Image (cartoon, rainbow, N blue to C red; front, side, top):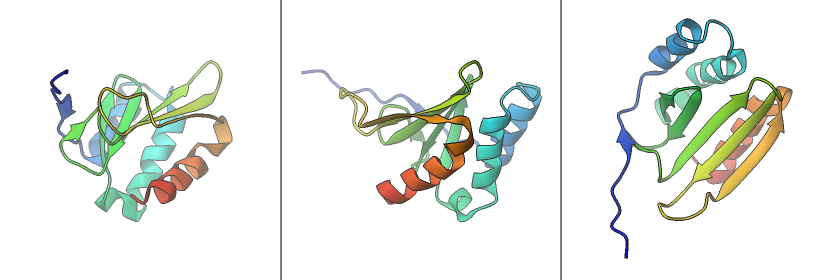
Length: 119
């Protein structure tokens, strides 16, 4: 039996995450930036925690965030112009939820996911 070792990161503030996408990516990740601003301007900011790993946004209801447990991983592919959502609920298991969405549907689908999982 494998022993679980968490892979955690302290949550970053939504302001920090927003600035990171502005400064580090210089406008290339405007879709993820729009999602971060959507979170910042809603009540999500008080109940969701976020962290970035390269161009990936990882969201959880816990701080610190365990990247392999109850975490939504979101990327936006700049070439295909598609969102990729992957929800990992438990370590050592396949992701519970994997979806790809068209560019204009990302925020809507994010809101739907949050409602579906009751975060």
